[in-house]
Structure formats: structure tokens, C-alpha cells
Image (cartoon, rainbow, N blue to C red):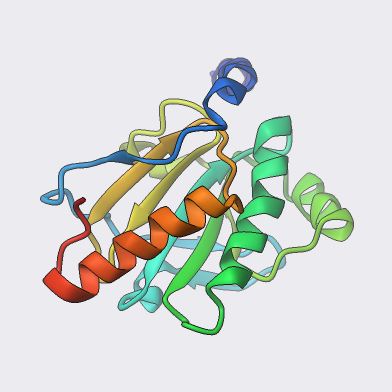
Length: 177
């Protein structure tokens, strides 16, 4: 069963490239992101709750998904653009058991944000329809936006969009446009 699921995830990931030039799709602000604890790819435990008070991009990916691997580097660039403000964190959730593949990828393309393993696909209730899928979570833990498929995360348009979202949230307590 897991092999079928992983095979269908790989097929869906191949279709995700078409969305790279889009920004993010709004989600209902009434939906709260359920917190989770998962192991880091290098050992130890990560808890999403530890990032409360920041915007968090949670991206779901797999080593078999080429667009996913590309997104990881662009997300690192994006995170670095906001590092001085300390308002944005990125968390990459690998869907499946390929710890060796994840760590090999990180040797070639290191990132400074948490890389966690959803070996048993425990976060299926997050409703990930395709890989990559990325959610923007507000500082109070609500879903704000979602990207199904790859995006140009480090583009000036994405950076400007996120700045507006962050500013709106600071001004009103919501992230809607």
C-alpha cells in the first residue's frame, strides 16, 4: 500500500511544475494547523509548537520529487531574505522513510531550517494533495495560504507578497489581502 502511495506522489509531483509562476492560494483563517512532533533527519525531535509566534512555511516533499528538491533551495533563499526580521521559519517534512536519501540530499544542498521525517505519513490529515505542497501558518497557528506544486519562492514577487502578508498581520491580526 505504501509503495502505491509513494508512486502516486511521484507522479503528482511531476505535474506540479506548471504552478511555479503562481504565488499562494488563500485558505480559510478558521482552520488551525494541528501541531506535530516528528524526528529530525539527523536525530532528535522537532515540535511545530516551538515556532509559535512566527510565520512558518511547512513544505511537504520527497527525495524522488525533482521539483521538491528545487523548492528546498529556493525556500532557503527566501528564509535568508527574512532572517534579520526573525518573522519567518521554514520546516521541510519528508513524506516517507528515505532518511538516507534525505541526508544525502542535504550533503549536496544543505539548508539551515528543520528537516523532519514523516516516515509513517502521520500528517496525512493535513490534506496534502500533491508534492510539493507548502502551507503558510500564521504566528497564532492558523492556515493562511497554501501552494500546491512548485513555486519561485525566492522571486521578488513572492518576497513582496509575503511582506504584505506579514505587514497586514501585524496591522490587523489577520493575513488576508
